[in-house]
Structures are given as C-alpha cells and as structure tokens.
Image (cartoon, rainbow, N blue to C red; front, side, top):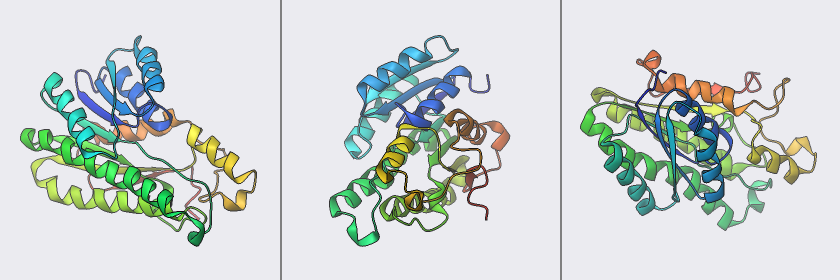
Length: 251
C-alpha cells in the first residue's frame, strides 16, 4: 500500500503496459485516473479494478490534442486538487518498412502520438506538481530509444525523443522536488506486440530490438519498475532511463 490515497494519472491505460500500471497502482490503494481512445477497453479496465484497494476512473481523451490533455488534467485536479504521480504510456507503432518507404502520414501520426502526446501530457501534469513542489513522472519509452531501429525508424525516432524530452524536463524541475524518469521496455506480451508479429509474418529479421531468451515480458512485471520509480524508494532517481528488456539489448 505504498500509494494509498495518492492521485495517479495514466495515459494509454486501456491496454498493454498502461493497463498493467493502472491495475498495479490501484492494487496499492491509489486513486487512478486514466485516459485513452478505447472506451470499451477503458470500461473493461475500470470493472476489473473494482475489487482492488484503490479506484480507477476512465476518461476518453486523445493525447495528440493539447486541449484534450488540458481537459483531462483539469478534471483530475478538480476531483483531487493535485497530482502526485503521472505515467505517460500512450503510444502507437506502425508497419515495418525501410526508411524511405514510410509514408509521411504514418511518420506524422507516430510523432504526434508518441512525442507530442507526452509533451502535451507533461505540460499540464507539471502545473499542479510545480504548485505542490513535489511529484513524479514516468514516461514510457522503448529499448529502441538506445539504439538504431531497422525497419522501425519512425517509432525509434519517437522513443529517442521521449528520452531526450524527459531528461531535459528532469533538469528543469529537479530543484523543486519533481522527478522525471523513463522506463524503456523490451518486447512485452501486449496487443502491440501481437500486431507487430502479424505485420512481419514471421520474418524476425524485421523485428527491431530482438527477443530475450525468455520471450516477451509480462507487462505486470514491467509495471513493477514503474511503481518503483514512482515510490519513495527512488527519491534520488531523476533523469534516468531504466532498460527493462531481459538483457536483450545488453550485447
């Protein structure tokens, strides 16, 4: 119950790692507000958290739109007065292709979602944290943030940007007690992973990043790293990018 009565915001909380994070915080007593575009998925996650110690409330918002993020955060602050923790997990991938074969509209959508979505969210999440002179933000990047991303240049580019943005913001606000970190997972057993496998039709040469020997991770295990970074145990950790990939990117 490390997070009993804490106010937590999660973007992209209707599936995958975002869903696992919502459930993990709720299990430890937090009041979680999460957003996404999938209203059916949001209702499902809400219902599945009902037996847990805390509570989870879904609101349909689009991270690509600054006004949507302002509305979402205003809703949270109206209900709870402040935000203790924010996890920005909303993100999309795209079909595998060589660099010059990616359509401009795909590149733009990945950038608007994965980069500007985090920017918009942080812009409004930070305001109540600055007022309180406290808070923790964890942005979800990828192991493709630390190396090249063959066949996946738009996605890799976006995750490099998330890490750079997070480190810069961490320096801006570390002096007033706000911590900003990244978690960069390897492959996880999520709908995005399943779509990626279907897209490459078994050609693992097109699977950027590789698979650990143990296979894709359980998102619930990766969520434990997110909760650690949000906790008091990580009080001296800011501006970091935690790689959680079963060692696949070590070599």
